[in-house]
Length: 276
Image (tube, rainbow, N blue to C red):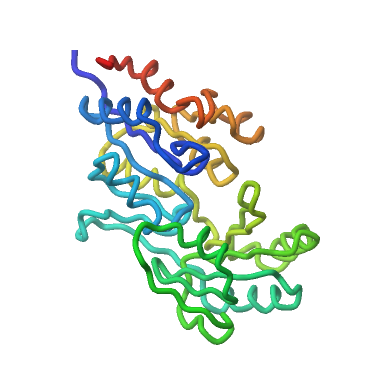
């Protein structure tokens, strides 16, 4: 009997990756076996390309990738593949930058695909934000002056006491133009992309490309930037360590990212046998 091909979408942080930012060997083996059997595996992450490509290579992927929560959908190995890049308007971004200056946020960063602009130098933030295996250029200086293009995303590192005020301000003044999410602990980073951008948008495009119906899309996630994707997928799976809101809309809940949640689910759901 011919196996029906599934599209398997993997969020990275808190989902595919352990807390040490690694792919466990069991989960990796299951994914490689699923690929061998003809299933299509894609990465769908809030991260930029530069800090996802390492895991893409570790899994030997040759598929499109969803970055920046859907604001960038591209194919790392096929420049002719028709992807999409939907950045924020520069004017909107600079209005938000001004509001952030008024609130004296700790720091701000804009990304134009893989080009990074950081408002103020901060070694620990660079380590978190750049999280890349490659040396990459970045500019440091006032975003008001340095940001001359439409950014793919804007990251705000607010003072603790200003988080609610800032999110309310974003809702009140920019709701028609932007989507904003808060990163999980320990970073209270607020991430902004263009309105209407989410991982489900990327998944839909990739599923159409491979002609895989919605009921055969398996998607894994743990945070609020996975909500649309988990809701959209025929088989939406929340990690055991995921937020309650995600678990409430997911069709399935699996083990945590530290307990091979993805590997265990795929193995059972797709009836994969490993010779270990």
